[in-house]
Image 1 (cartoon, helix red, strand yellow):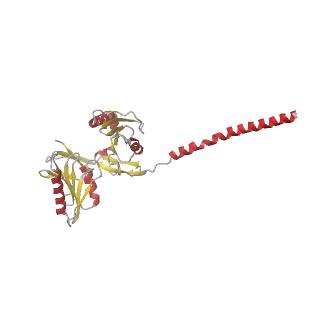
Image 2 (cartoon, one colour):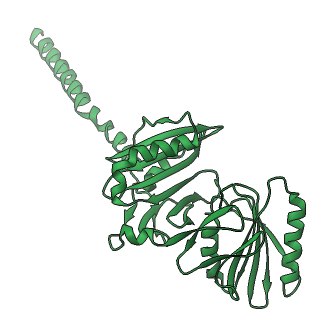
Image 3 (cartoon, rainbow, N blue to C red):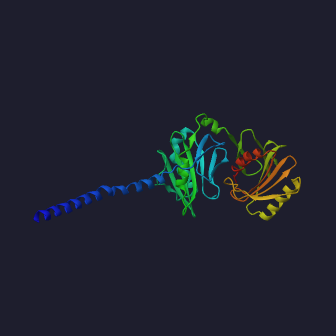
Length: 321
């Protein structure tokens, strides 16, 4: 009987030992769950490769973002619905790296005297950055001093900061090696009006001249495609300016129909009231610009692709009182 009792105790002990071993060997099976989550987080981002028509570079954009020429030598990345959040890209000559710290500091100070060095992380090995807080916005001035020097200026919001989103796209910028810095510089010339207190960057091939007091014209061929620039005083009666713009477009129209829209592209022209209509040999646009440099722009084009160069140049109009 004692032998049977000892045998029973041995069997129970062996079963308990095997059970304990089984628990130890099966416990790690829970680890792959964490690996699945990590794999899910690493899902490839849906980028679209875009090449600038204004500067020699390409960039991969996230969904709902677009690349637009702001002015000669400057492009902007904008979101289709969040117009207040955007990034300016400006390629620089290689020798600009030597003075990048000074340039960045000066640009940041021009935005806000309280601008400070940015202490966060950036996707570049060699870069200097400042951040400036203006009302409910934050502006980041980033000077990249690598093989392809450039300035990145990011405009975003304090409560909904998109810096990381813009940097995700910025790190994909690739400069075209077939273009030289000298070619980039020579894409435009600066026109200083002797008729009105403004200057603008004019694309090569275009001409600019005063045509009457208070009006300057930029054109390829004034009989085919042209833009007239009229500065407007800040104290102007904007309702009267708008009425005159609409009447002018209606008088130029071939059928009397005038379409009014709010412009949502670019930087300085963004928010402008635009009056447009079809004419006998093309289209006429009148932009009433209230922000930045208040002005009225009258543009005649025969083909749709003639409009964009004028808008690029319009973005550079700057009052120099």
